[in-house]
Length: 291
Image (cartoon, rainbow, N blue to C red; front, side, top):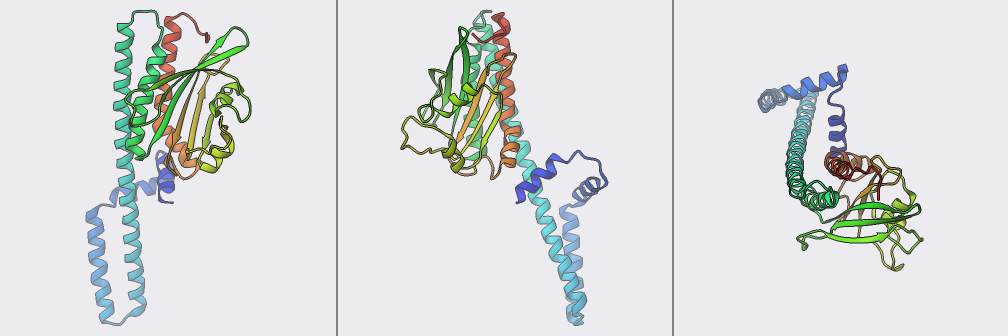
């Protein structure tokens, strides 16, 4: 409940209505000094009322004191929340800067052919995002970037770059034909076959088990939450798909709303990084279409 309210306040912090202006003013003056002064004064008044057996005012002042304690506890929680947001935002910025620098070095070292730029960026993104989410959520994740190619007029294939475990020191690579048969292939192939650039959220294990298809029909997923983000990027086909599996309950949030906030804060910068790499490769290879 607290985080949902904090998220709502954060999203509306730039609004200039009288209500939000008033909230900002109260927040700014809600310092520890003001808190201590209020508690001291009310404690003295309550003690005096108790000695005079003025029970009506005693209970009124006690209620005000309790409200003040609840209010300042909420304010302190919101400050900790904002501190964590800033800290994580700085961590994301640092990760993106490091990845962008490494990508620039790769481009400079590999001439002007453009080949392999997006694959290299995918390796950087999966490793970086894995480390970041481990830091932010504390849980294990599986992260994949799937790039799609067109072979001729009908057939499509994809290359998947994945980071699956802390035991791996690098990402793995596999190639697949985009062909979807119910209960035979993985869920991401369905996304590619449907060919819609879309955000997909599954916020519970029940949803994951209901929607995912596995080669082994008896196998149940060990995924508790799933995010899939498909991007077309100047093409009629999906250019790439970023998918993230959480291996613990509520790792990315307790609702689709919290999951959406999580996506905006932590995942979207990596989508932009991948789009940047994809466009560079297409430009250098003088080809705006998937091969």
